[in-house]
Amino acid sequence: MTKAYGRLLIKLSGEGLAGEDGTGIDPTVIGRVAQQIRDVHDLGVQISIVIGGGNIIRGITAAAQGMDRANADYMGMLGSVINAMALQDALEQVGLPTRVLTAIEIQQVAELYIRRRAVRHLEKGRIVIFGGGTGNPYFTTDTAAALRAAEIQADVILKATQVDGVYNADPVLHPDAVRFEKLSFDEAMRANLRFMDQAAIALCRENGLPIVVFDMGVPGNIHKVALGERVGTIVSE
Image 1: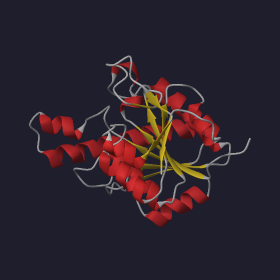
Image 2: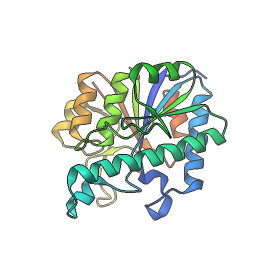
Image 3: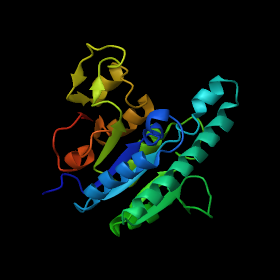
Image 4: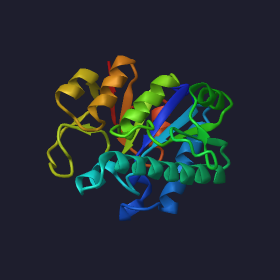
């Protein structure tokens, strides 16, 4: 089988690790994620991952409830580091070499993010997990994913979601919503489609970085995308 991408970045939500409860980390769910990533690694693809912290705390939600926004966002970044460590453990249990790099210095548990170091780890076949977002409040982990993907010169961002692509409306609330197979960056931004935040989409557009939005809950989907099969929605120039 011929891989379609040499280096990719997977954007995982924290909620995607939580299972049905929506909070915490479900060992069964994170184990399935690790198995899917191993299948892609076996193709010889260089894999990096940005993971959110929404299963532990969402900064913007905490801010809406009265917490200082910057403080809430830093707490969210720390939540993403917890998820990165949990994913690292799950990946190593299936025999994969990993490194966690964080935008916030926590030297006892992870390496500080340095672009050249991250690229070198990828070149050595290690899976690189980016925790801590961008290291700055007021930025989402979607934006962190776009930033890191551009910095390491990834070929594509795989945006793992709980639906099978980008729709013109929320398919949960609107059963007649239409799914797109392809979108341009400009179309996505004009329609204000919320599969990623606008800053992240704009950063991908500026760097010619395609995004594939797909359902992480379907076994084998990451493998199919890595092989270039049509899965979900592709957003590109």
